[in-house]
Image (cartoon, rainbow, N blue to C red; front, side, top):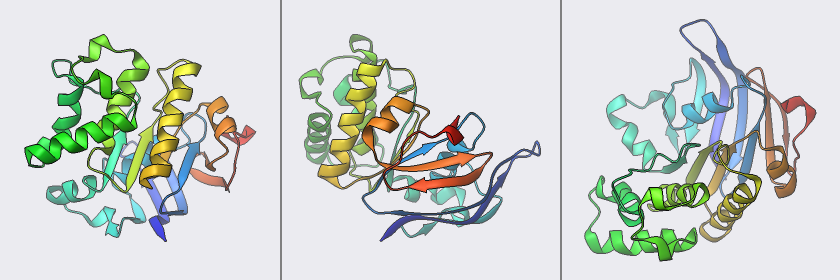
Length: 232
């Protein structure tokens, strides 16, 4: 069953740049997919359209049964509750503890306190940080901060996790740790993971589905792909 479907999608910015054109794509529920491509290939634009930071100029994007392009601005939260997002720069709140950073995602939607505690501890256990609940972000390594960001993204058990260059600020060892965490989340929770990356080593090691974009166009979609020359 497809969780994401794109049909004849185009994204043209006001400055005249076409970032995505004629993109057709179907991603099955439970998949782990890398989106690769050189700078300007459209990776980040695709991710942004999936969580409705950007709207497609043409075509149709369906995520979890919702037609993303047709959602009113006041209803975007309905889409975002179905997914989690992990960025390159962690985006943690410095004055909150690890527990509070993760809990924040549930507090804003009015979840009850006992449910928040249970879900936060489960998410932190899933990313291997249950022993760091009282720490603050500046007491953590970069890899640990990214794991907190992942816990925050999965705490509401989303069907889809979007990751935009999540290992971009990390060294190879920390990057591998993050990938193992994401792989485990994909397997144990059944979360569909879509990850934009230029990390050749990680893509080659993981042997997951790989979408290759070039100049905003899909040039390759392989079930067990590697980082190919088209992506440079």
